[in-house]
Every structure is written in C-alpha cells, then in structure tokens.
Length: 500
Image (cartoon, rainbow, N blue to C red):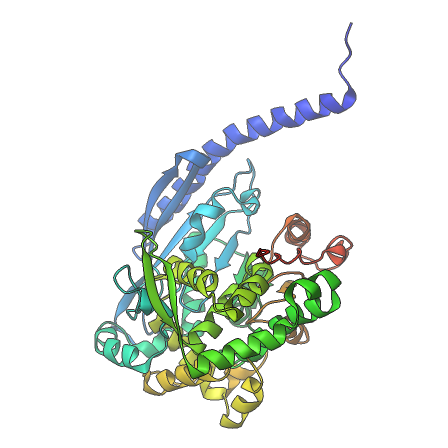
C-alpha cells in the first residue's frame, strides 16, 4: 500500500483551504460591494456602481464623491472625485484597507487598478484607489503637451515651456479655482471618502509625490492612519524640482564608479564619464539629427536631439533599474554618434505617459508648496557640475510665476513628526528622490524605519515584499528581518555589442 507523505498531506490541505477561500471570497466580495453600494444610497454625495473583472474573478465598486472645491466657501463649485474600491480576497478580511496614493504630482491612482486586481495587497485588505483632485477622472487639469504620431519631435521638446501653460490658463481658470488643488485640499477629499465608506483606520501606500501626500495625510488626520509604507520619498523639505539635478548626478556617478572599479566594465566602456561629458559638449555646440523608427509605421523618421533633450533622456533611463543597467551601453553608442537607442527609449517613455500626467495640477501643487520656498542662491549649488543643469528648474520656476496659486503658509514647511509606524523605502540609484530624502523624513518620524535597496525610482522584489507584508501585518517597524535585502546587489550592466 502506497503511503502519502506528511508534507503532501499538508499541501493538499492548503490547496483545499485556498479553494474554499476562493469560493467564499467571491461571495464575500459581492456582499462587501453591496455594503458600499448601500452607503451610496444613504449618502447623496456618493455615486457608486458595481463592476466585475472576470479574468481575476474580482468584484469592485467605482464611482465618485462630490466634494466642495473650496471647503471654506458655501455655495461654491462642487467637483467629483473618482475612486475605485477593490475588496479583499480573504473570507474574513481585516477592517483596515490600503489607500494607494499616486505620484507625479498629476498622475491618477486608478491607473494602478489592473495591477491591484492580482496584487498581494488584496489578500487580507480592501484596496482603495483615488484619483486626486485635478487628475484622472477627478476634474482633471490638463495642459496639452507636444508630441504625437504626426509630431515625433514634440516628444523631445520641453514639457515646461511657459507658452504652453499661458495658452491653457483661460480654459483651466474657467473650470477651476487653481489655488484649491494643493495636497492639503486633496487629503481632505481622501479623508471624506474614507469616512463615507465606513473605514475607521487605513494603511497608506505612497510613492514619489504620493509619499508627500501620505505625509500630509498623516499630519492632518493622524488618528485615522494605522501605518504607512512610502517609497521614493519626497518629504516636506523636498523642494520639487530643486533636487532633480543633484540626485540624477548622484545616480550617474554611481554608475561611473562601478565602471571604474570593475575591471571587465572598465575594459568594455573605458572612461565613460569623460565620453559622456564630451557628448554633452558636442550636443551643446550642435544638436544631432537622429534617425529612429516611427512607433506605429516602423518607417524611418528623424528628430533633432538637443543637449537638454539628451540630458532628459538620460534621466528617464535612470528611473528604472533595467534602464540604469542599459544606460552605459547607450552612452557609449551616443559617444560614437549613434543616439538611436537612447532616443527611441525616451520616446517610448513619453508615449506611455502622454496624457496621463495632469500638468496643470502639477503646478497647482509645486507652484504653491515647493517653488516659492526655493531661494535664488540655492539654484547654483543645486545644479552646478551636473549633467542636467538648471534648465529644468528654471523652466518650471518660470511657469510657476504665471500660475495663479497662493503659496502655502510658512507652517506647511514644518516637517511631519507624527508617531505613526512608517516604513520608508529608497532606491540606491534613484535619480530624483535619492536615499538622502528618506533619511531626512525618517529623522522626524520617531516610529519609522528607512531601508535602501539596489534600484532606481521604485524598487520591488520578493525580499522587499516579505518585509512589506510583515510590516503591514504588525504595523510595527521592530523585528523586521532585513538580512536578505542586505545581500542584494544591482544586476550586472548590459555589455556593449562587439563590433568587428
């Protein structure tokens, strides 16, 4: 008679339990959604409808919360804040959901919806995605940007030309009081939605600018927050976009150091730092005409690549770990006069996010919260001896001068120092929010832990997920096992193609 091993018995039990849980979860999801729909019947400010995603066997609700644009004015304009709530998969979900706050500023949180349907975050908790006011389907404040299938050159022109914003202002001012689209106003919307859905405490997850929004949420409504996980940290002290040039240079310097100290890289790339500087100088004297493939027809097309457009393309490549690892090969080719790989990568990025970022909302935030705090004497120190230089910063400062907003009061600049458990996560090679900013935020958060992983602006992986799970489970930064992430390293650089 064949015996079944004890380990197989446990596996079969787990499979059976998971199967029952999945059936129960489908029923629970519908019941939970109906609870939220019932709240909408009782609350005239809520508009909700039931949705179903058959591929993931998920039910969800989506809709709008009507809020005052200006809470200090009675009888003023109302705006509708779009959000999606995805119920937990567990048979008995935990009561504290996860609110995901997106970056930018200007990107909609509901863009995360497809990924959250199968995310581990749903195992025990509901997930809430809110398009911050001024983004997505929440009274979007869009400024038309250059770039299209008929205008590939537009993807290589600056998104921060003051003329673009001056042209868009009349339409935006006709539909919105642009001074009421700051982080403080948005956080009040988030909290109103939290209360309307019946959640007492929530867990925040914010990345990039979403970390700023989460910090402001914690400051304004600390009693409602159970925990916060923040990545690519942009604390109150982060004066967007002042740190961009220095942080991107730090990321480049790490690559150059890696090449200098690794024999096989040094042999393959040579003195890449000098070659990079030579390329920048050459483009400053004479922009390059670059042939690339049209993204829809595949036919050859040409664009003009300026020094600033080249520098911006490099920053975009640094954003991701994969892009970081490919960049040296692209820079070596660029030095040899072949800009195609870098230009096509930059164009693909711009096409992917084209129309997603609400640039009008971006300036509602930065022109009120950040740029007014930048002193002219800080610009030289922040941008000197960096490949990005001061162009990006000065262009944004010029737009901020014409943007009709009110600077936040001096109290806004005070650091967030609440006692909420906060897990702070930085990428070692992040070109816009370097680990320095995670350390700055942690210095004011007594119940926080800052961890640094190899990677760019946004890191992930099974080792990190284990830590995030443990933190979310306990809402404590104590006794987290960091042993495995300490052993992590950046992937190897992509080597240049040998030419015969």
